[in-house]
Amino acid sequence: MRTAFAYFLLTFKPFLQGLLVNATLWQPSASIQSLKMRAEIIRNIRAFFYKRNVIEVETPSLSQASATDIHLMSFSTEFIGPHFSKGLPLYLQTSPEYAMKRLLAAGSGAIFQISKAFRNEESGKHHNPEFSMLEWYRPGFDHFALMDEIDSLIQCILKCERAVRITYQNAFEAVFNIDPINASLTELKKLCEIHGFENIAKDEEDKDTLLQLLFSMIVEPTIGQDRPCFIYDFPASQAALAKINQENPKVADRFELYFKNMELANGFNELTDANEQLKRFESDNQKRTSMGLAQVPTDHNLINALASGMPECAGVALGVDRLIMLALQKKQIKDVISFDIERA
Image 1: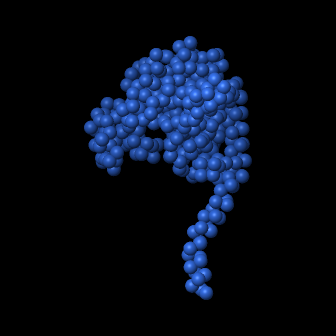
Image 2: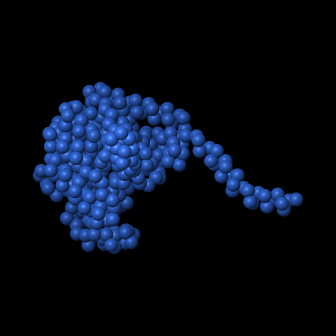
Image 3: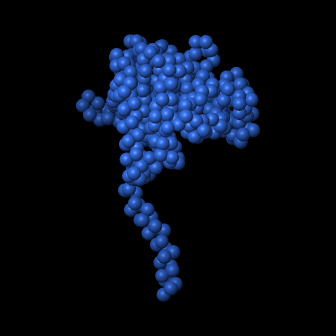
């Protein structure tokens, strides 16, 4: 009898455990108390902008175009309906940036948005395919003025010290004793080999891919540990949607904010030149083709908005979930959102 019962347990225990796990997946991944605190933080974020007369806006999550950046992967779907019986390809937005810039070109003035963003990437401690993003734009600001405002918001939410500012070049040189702006591909491959990334680097021919690898894996853990840290003056080749610096064309007017091993924000002195922006989109798609990735339709609505005259401004995207993780001292993103991807 004991043998039969032991056999039963051995056979059905994994099945029963699976049932128990599945039976609890309906529950939120974050505690109700954490979700209440999240709601309070988001209310405080909105209050921060209301006091500064920055208008809250909403833009579509679905678009006929998406980010061409080779490091961003979009979710795609298709609309079947009136006038589109053969189907209209659509993308879930990786950021509300393009639509918000169209509002700026239309005369909105300073605007902000707290929205869902979607990226077909990894899920883990700091990542969920669907996440909350705070994005705002300040006509008349350059990227340094915007850093000041971000600093005020971060201090308000996290009760932390004022952020420090370090150039990308200085942060890189402090760790590797090599100038990242002028380093050769061979030098970067050698660095990767020294730090255990030889398998990734040996066939890589793109400098920026190696720079980003070294920066994210080796440099980032050395910055922003005790207080927030802005890294600015990124290489011009990593400008994305930022202006190239007028005084030093080798760097872009771009910054990122780091704190306690998390990248919190990515901001620019925004590019307003339609022709230059179109060239960058086309260059991205050429890189996609060379890498065997699908091309992404160029957002001509954005290009036309820039051509019509978008005001000089600075803008930034900030990860709301990561900010709340820091505020609540949580280690995983699932601990501050209602349902992570495994429970969605």
